Amino acid sequence: MYIRTNVMALNILNNLYAHNNQISKSMERLSTGYRINRAADDAAGLAISENMRYQINGLNQASRNIQDGISLIQTAEGAMQEIHAMIQRMGVLANQSANGTYSDADRVKLQLEFAQLKEEINHIAGKTNFNGIKLLNGDLTLPGQGLIIQAGSGADDHIIFDMPNILDAVAGIAGLDISTAVGAGAAMGALEGAVDDVSTGRAKLGAYQNRLEHRYNSVVNMSINLSSAESRIRDADMAEEMMLLVKSQMLAQVSVAMLAQANMMPRNILKLLEAL
Image (cartoon, rainbow, N blue to C red; front, side, top):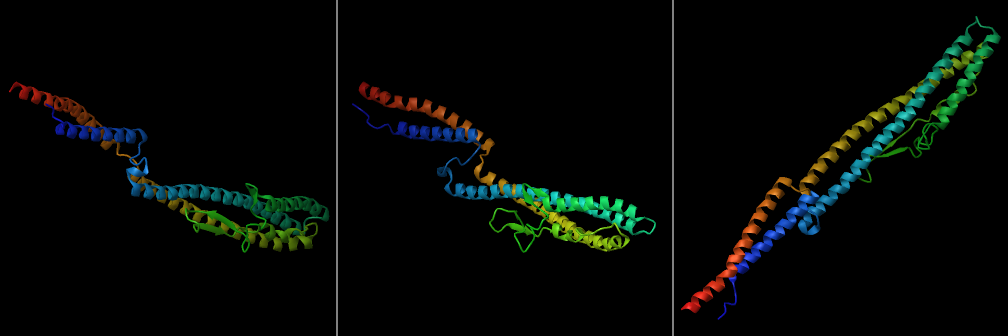
């Protein structure tokens, strides 16, 4: 005589499979730190998480772009600061040469320093660069290309700055000569205009830097919040997974013990029937 189907054992075996499956999932999640390790774990959650990751990666790169932009502007502003200082010195020399207490020989000596300052101003205005990109020679001045900063994760999240053309602004001082009192007087007026042009350019750069610093703070804040939201979707709750692992391991152990008991039941029933 045979009892062909042990329903109780089958039920226990199914439960054991379920517990072992949960143990495998919990161990994988605990080892990777992710609740979603493949699309089958949560198809919709995976799609949302990947879209968020794309935005987060874009925002993180945008924050680096903005920092590079700030460094570029600081480089340009530092060069313009030196130009300002040299123009100021040239103004002093021109004022000195225009004074009637100086002889022509004195003015020639003043002109020597004046000429060197002119040359250096033109050099700085034409050669100042950041990563090989010239900053003050008009290449980044609108309506031309301008300075483009990609400051977000979207294609249209960029800022275009009109960089000052300092090479053009100081072009008027190229022909100045203070070796005569008349020339010194003319130089004073031209230098005053150059100071004003450079001051305007520096003010623009200061405004650009302030804007970029505010944009940087905004981008970092968006990245942090998106990362937090993405983490809630994709990352595993370590405490919950540990609890599920321990629970499933205990249930699996009990199921193994109960399966052994269930497998004994048909034999016991047969023995009972044979004894009748």
